[in-house]
Image 1 (tube, rainbow, N blue to C red):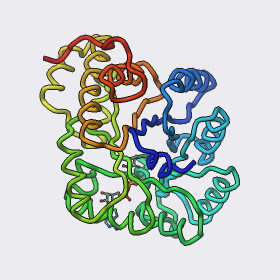
Image 2 (cartoon, rainbow, N blue to C red):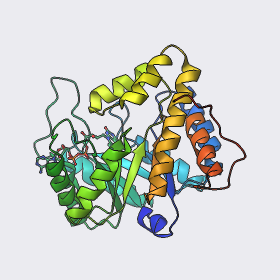
Image 3 (cartoon, rainbow, N blue to C red):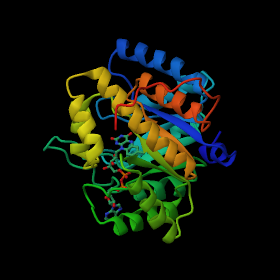
Image 4 (cartoon, protein in one colour):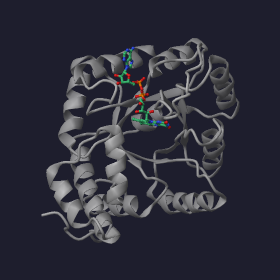
Amino acid sequence: MKITDILARGGPCISFEFFPPKTPEGEAALMRTIEALKPLGPGFVSVTRTGAKPREAPVELVTRIRALGIEAAAHVTCIEASRDELAAHYDLIQARGIENVVAIRGDRPSDPQFRQPPDGFRYAVDMIRYVRARGHELCLVGGGHPEGHPDCRDLELNIRHLQMKVDAGLDAVITQLFYDNADYFAFVERARRAGIGVPLIPGIMPITNVPQIERITALSGNQIPAALRVALERARDDEDAALDVGVEWATRQCAELLRSGAPGIHFYTLNKSPATRAIFENLGAEGLVGTPAPRLATPSAIR
Ligand SMILES: Cc1cc2nc3c(=O)[nH]c(=O)nc-3n(C[C@H](O)[C@H](O)[C@H](O)COP(=O)(O)OP(=O)(O)OC[C@H]3O[C@@H](n4cnc5c(N)ncnc54)[C@H](O)[C@@H]3O)c2cc1C
């Protein structure tokens, strides 16, 4: 089923993002994560494209996940691909009966020798136009950047670029992670003012490890609010305490987002289930998703 049809059913659409594991052990662990998250009834899940794995890896994993009865979207990046490679890849996606693609530019590889194929696509919008011109009847979901993007910090200009993607045929947007809901609300307001009408799904990455989130936000340029930074500093050398802080912060974020009418929440799970399950239980206890759970899953770590 297309993600747009799932969203149109109403009620919050909860989704989970995974990446293709590098090892058989990682794959077994991911399958356990999927089993643990399936009872939460995700609207869909998505599988990222990582440069370390063949282009087909997300398609293979999406095929396996769909066989478990869970709708799944394959991420397709374009920065490193030639036009022919992408054409063959979209043909494969179509042949597998996959209906949803997260169409993303991808980050420039760190290898200084990297050269983009001369007939490749510079931006996601170019790939979206190409896919639509080829007549693929896919639901295309793209990336949005509430805090701007390292290549373009101008927030209004980012919205104009997003508008170009929607005009080219994007059906919905998942945002980059953010830790201050004010950034998402302002992003939605700018987008709606610009006439962008597609669903804008907030992307949430629960913090489970302090050094890891510092690395990720340093790369993406996302801000960690002062109150969260202070709480994380206290939990720097204690993984359980960091998990509690991350779960409580994300619970508050998600509760406010859902109460404010966000169409759903896309969880960047990093292939792990405990934080997402705990947040889901908390949201259930507040009557915001699924069956209410009997208790709050985390102590109050942030005061
Ligand atoms: C939901 C989501 C999923 C992701 N999945 C993956 C994944 O699977 N694999 C992966 O490697 N990375 C992934 N990423 C990260 C992504 O690759 C990076 O954020 C990337 O740098 C931008 O991708 P994009 O599709 O938003 O790019 P684009 O939409 O192409 O935008 C990139 C930058 O270029 C600017 N821009 C766009 N069009 C123009 C134009 N015409 N002229 C000038 N500037 C322009 C934009 O404002 C923006 O700053 C994901 C990100 C998100 C939000």
